[in-house]
Amino acid sequence: MDSPWDDAGAPPPPPPPPPRWDPPFISWLLLGGSVALTLAAMALPGLTGITWLLGEQVERGEWYRLLSTVFMHGG
Image 1 (cartoon, rainbow, N blue to C red):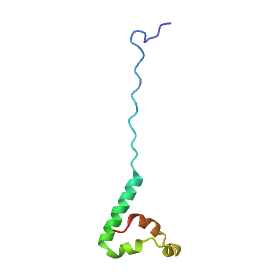
Image 2: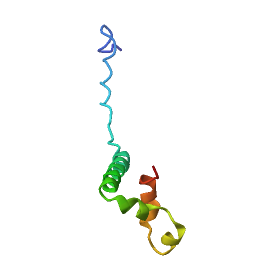
Image 3: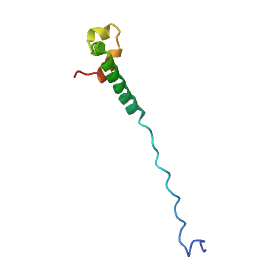
Image 4: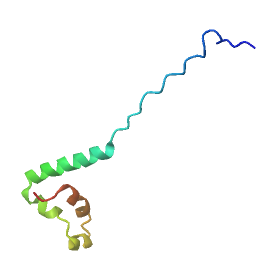
């Protein structure tokens, strides 16, 4: 049985799909938080004191200190 591609060979494969780009939302969120808190610390000098991670304050319900200390570190 003759194939329709006997003389020309097999048909070319389909082109590959374009590469998929997933935006790095978590990285943007961390970078934005860092920039925002840095600018806020420059505008409000006392801000760094309320972002320190102190166990007593976290036990009293100041849960924001668990995240704010990631962005605000001394120096």
